Image (cartoon, rainbow, N blue to C red; front, side, top):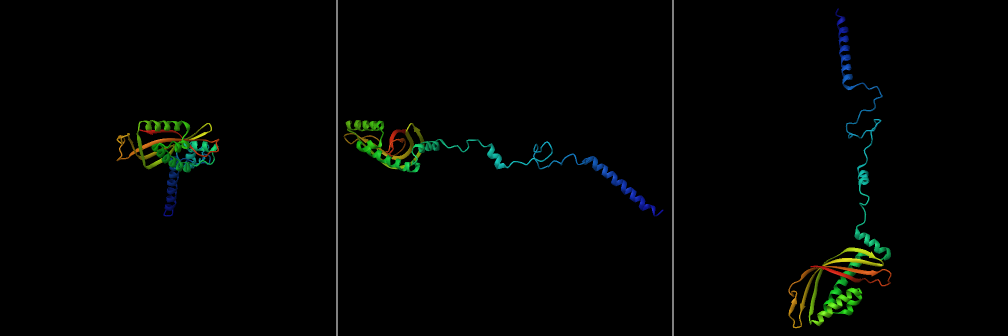
Length: 226
């Protein structure tokens, strides 16, 4: 009898083990090798193919690049204008142009104030020269004297570049401090304040016929902000 107890214990343990196996199979399901791999819990929904194979996530940098607009790196209007000018004038350099334009700005203002039409003529287009010459003539006939002092140029930025036919055009925005005073024939102040400067914003457009051998640009248009 005493030898039968271990045998009974073994049978009891076997029955308990069989019961646990059946319970686990009911909870987890039976895998027979044809149901495919278990889904990856770290894979976002919808990232598994129809055949159960894991689909690799695309590289984020590549995805961002593919979703970026086709014209994300397109040139700005100003850069496009520079490119158009260089087609007919390969030597065009915006930095050198800006330096020359600042010098022309000072020379033209000075020549206009003193009424020096001879100095103005090569710097201006025929149309602009005609306007400047008329203003100087009217001032002279009225007996007025213009005192125009350029205190300093605060900034000079190219804001536009374009080509019209064979003519290249570049517009610069000048912001400067000036003292502009007009005296009558008796020396009295007609306009302006000789004791203070004002900030003036000018937009000057320079042009050059790219077919010409003359490398110089001339002032072809002006406008100011009041």
